[in-house]
Image (tube, rainbow, N blue to C red; front, side, top):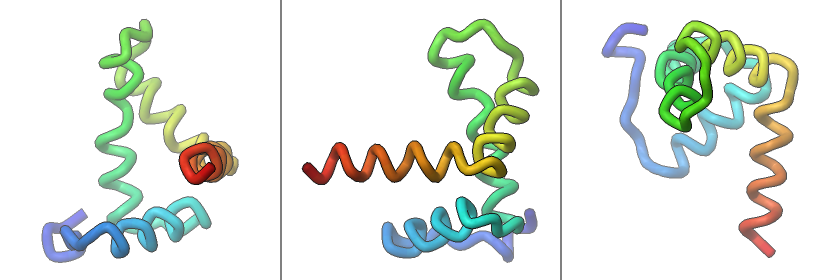
Length: 79
């Protein structure tokens, strides 16, 4: 992703971008997400390599798991 294609934006911007990502859009925003997310399981203490985290993140986005989990989080936090 080039610096020119990335926009810092506000919460509404990122909500739209995240929805587009979860709907299957493949662009610089997805690259940044996939670059940042693989470390989460390692930081959480799970015994895995960062490369495995990247694969899991991409699969969760592509197969709809990430979208489903986000919908559940929204439902829980809005009740």
